[in-house]
Image (cartoon, rainbow, N blue to C red; front, side):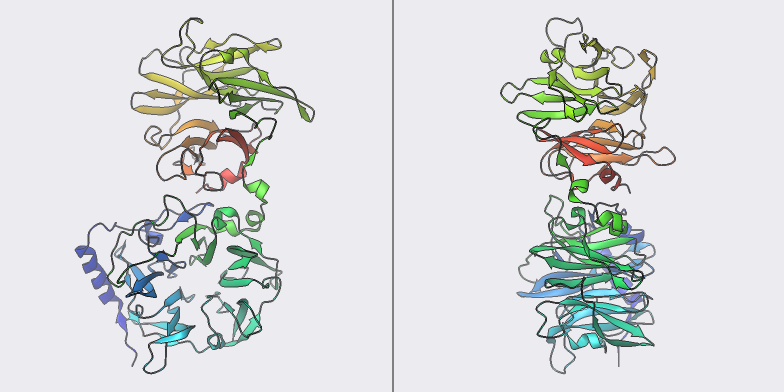
Length: 597
């Protein structure tokens, strides 16, 4: 007789475990209370589902969002075991992970809910033969919901189980099953198959054929609920990654496309969808200081030394699967050195800025031998750029952070030049402005009140012109750092007003602001913890109400272990320029918008 495992008992066990162990966070809300991701993947539930153990496979959330099962691979007395863990939302709060009552003795995995949530499917090496605890092949088992608990697993009597199902399967809303198997010795690798659900029974396996199946390995299919697209893991050449194919006219499958490198960075696999298909989960193998977070819970099921085989569970907005997103070319998606040999060349180039029509460029150039910084101007005539011209005043004193006005006639910058115009440099820098005079540049003038103040504790820096000639800049007063905007009124700047940002700029180490032409995206750089190393670029977005979001890291497609800083939007809003280790890079601005939450 099948034994039902009461959910009420599970809740009691979880509650007692919670009381006995400290340090586990209170998790409330959908998806364990995690903040939903944007178009850049983020580690899912760090320390809870993504841990220093081997996290292998996407989590399976119930359709009502109140239960989740996930697999962790560990060792029990030297033998690897895939254990299914379970969490449940009780009285609004998620219980801590505990081994599922049906898992723990053999290699289990591939757990997923039926579309109606009344059944679990499990890939397992358990045996249905008397006296045998373990099988040499993986088969699919069914666990029916029974009352307020789960029945014991039973073998699923379908054609799929005639073969090893270890490469994974996925179930559409209509019951159709997509699986990766080898059905004969003639197949060198697993291929993708379809098992149709017709009239309450399953048909035999149909090879999906080309263009989905190739001579390489295809596995771990993840079908959209409406079967409009299929995500799967594949090895093409020597590269492991996630691919997607879209159904054409509701019938045949289109050529598969490799997902962009934000998803496939380091090699990604094993995709799964949230119940509403809004988010995609997958296992990623990128290596940063945020990977393999230490788990916030304990279990006694694993014994002996443990080995992490790599990988964390990530999630991303499923819009990343949309056809335009996956078809971006590398040149459109990834940063590229701007004007190699012309702008980016020997020496150190940084902080590029340009006029609205793109005919004039101004940037900083540092001599590595003397560390002297000068401002370089270049003008475009037709398709060619003129010779570089050093702005004469930039040869004296310390000058940095230039910003060219939209019409190209003014430049604001930060300098420690003396206020009197001659003599020793000032101890603290101020914001200065220089204007074109004939074919050259006039003498810089210190911006007085209301931009610069005479308060000894105030520091004004990082100025940049807006489209109308107004000025944004950062003012630090003691332990407060804020972004200000001073509108232009004729030949003067009006009283600066603070920009109402959510972040504490000083605590977040945020500086180097740049605003998109439409005024809705603000970029800064920071070296705060949790980045990819050194300085990273961060973005804040203004919503329809005029409120700014918290700053978010724009992700590994741009940020690296090297320093990325000094962003600047082109005046047409199509590109972002930034500095990386002495070169100027260019990035399609739509990539920044992709991280919008």
